Length: 387
Image (tube, helix red, strand yellow):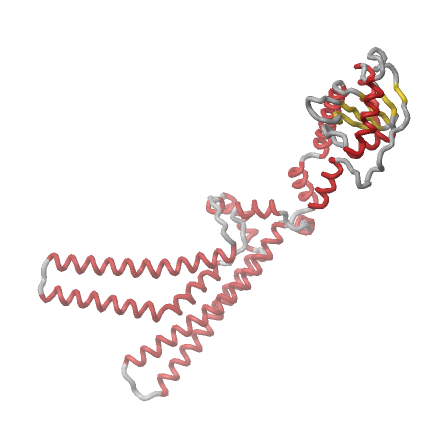
């Protein structure tokens, strides 16, 4: 990563970028933690492993002695098969335990992440220019420091363990070989356990550094964040076009619904609502279309073109527009006002219903927001209460 590019990457990685990195096998991990954890587990399980091995070897030896006293081909084959089966089962159990430990440590570091992309051959790895650059990177320097630290730790522990063993043997009177071997074995196991604990600690530090480097490599520039957001939500111009298209479709449906209305109630200039009374569909009049400003003007023009009565009643028009949605029946609290409106329309001669805009005394309706709100208003209040 170039210096300028590194300084420009100031934004934390998005979830999409993290997911893609995991799919590509780019995760933070330290192989030393798993190796040293297996070694520590092996040193702790060594007494049990050796004890079980001793029992199995003695059993195989007794079978060999038994068959050797009365040698037969069948007996020899039985001994060989039994010994081979015990050996394979023993190795499988121990190997399985170590593999399980290594997998558990890996899962603790990277989670349940598996990617075949990381195992694919990359020709960029054999690029000599890239190879020379990687030789002089901070990652290479840290790897060198890590190897030196591991050698120093192992060297010091080995020296002190061997020095302590030599002093202990030299300070005692001559002893048999068995106690000496027991003491040497316990000293070696102590050395391995101490080295493993220190190695795990060093691996934990390495994991922290690798995680920090990984997070830094995933950081994004502000432009990359904007581009990803645009890809996720869509181009703003396209969204605006879709909104205009949706509004156009909704307007067309509204205009088409006006043709089925019995009356259009106006504000008279800013609001228009279309009512239809069909006893076969509902017991009360139903709002089939509504609109404001330009759409209200188009509704009035379409009503005039289709010969549908236009009635000016600002309180009733505003109340219906505020409290009813399309296809809602009118609220119970304004049944009387709507009935009077329809009676006014039906008293007109059919030949004159679509001529001009009719005026009548304003209807008495509740204020929007009072207790007698419409069904649509009650739905909206209920939705807010649930939220």
